[in-house]
Image 1: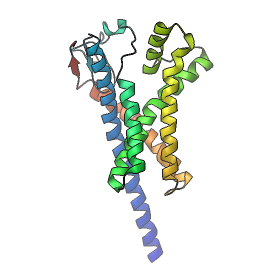
Image 2 (image 1 turned 60 degrees about the horizontal axis):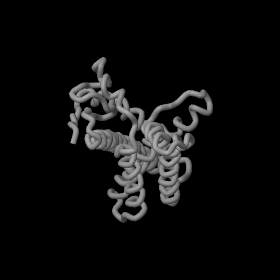
Image 3 (image 1 turned 45 degrees about the vertical axis):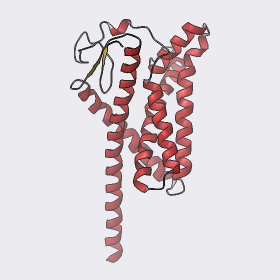
Image 4 (image 1 turned 30 degrees about the vertical axis):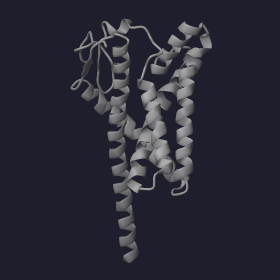
Length: 225
């Protein structure tokens, strides 16, 4: 009887831990995506480009993604090496990883872990598509790093540099993930590690649905600086 109660208590604790981790990841994803988009907005303002930013997409100033002409003007903006969106995300991944590896407090480490994991995923997934899709389909998969790569090619005249920003993002994201794995494997099994990794991915896709909704409700309009 006591072993049954103990097992039930353990399952309840695991279920609560899973729920809390998913909620934390969703909150962290939303904060990180918003910072990422604000990075785009700030770079555009410094370039003299007026735009609106939100929780997922950049578009014309005072417009929303639900508007048919959301990117009527912004679609003609040329790619530039000046962009703070991707660097902000990679910086959050690095800082989160360092704090998780160095911090002593359990709460600080969990929050740092969520920022490290979510921001690594935010660049790893799209950049893998940037690199793999052309090899498989011959078609371009346009993400932030690809746009930066086009600007890099325009400046240097070296065609293969178009994939350098994506490769750099993948490299940093993988390094952060490896460090997290090395620290976490001391406390959890591989099965549990990959289980929580799946939960983080699940939280990412849930967050994108929430972010798309918030994107049409809340915008920051940035004028040229």
